[in-house]
Amino acid sequence: LPSPSPSPSLLSIDLAAMSCGECGSEAAKLQCSRCKFVRYCSAEHQRAHWGRAHKTDCPHLAGAREKGWVCVTTQEGTGETPPHGSTVSAHYTGYLVNGTVFDSSRKKDRPFQFGLGRGQVIKGWDACVAQMKVGQAVKLYLSPEYAYGKAAVGGVIPANSALIFDMELLGFEK
Image 1 (cartoon, one colour):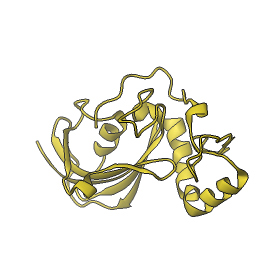
Image 2 (cartoon, rainbow, N blue to C red):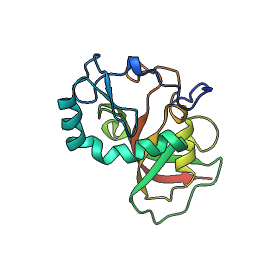
Image 3 (cartoon, rainbow, N blue to C red):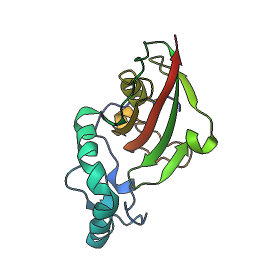
């Protein structure tokens, strides 16, 4: 995943460009009042998405809005924490806030490797992985500033998108 261009504002989100979190409709005029990242085309879709998925993610997305990123451990690790500059190996699955998968190393059956702290990945990955232990799995919630900022990516990730990742640190080399 390439590094984003610097973005001047943590909360510069183009809400008009966001689609419904439930159906993908471009007519999304309602907004989640807590996280403010997810939009809906109707109150019915907002209720359905809340009960199916958003109830779990919303508090963490709200935290990412305030802090830039939130990392929630889903499996404890037992190994070491990788030092700055090491080459890390990780599995990930990336999601838009509506649950759409946009990329996955697991589906490719190939772990992703990158230099930790070298600016080779998005800012939120460097920040979170630097605190992980080998074997640890997390759910990572990123504000646009810690993801791709104002850049749209690959025709799949809209500009100014908050993102969610399931990540697992497999190992590292110093």
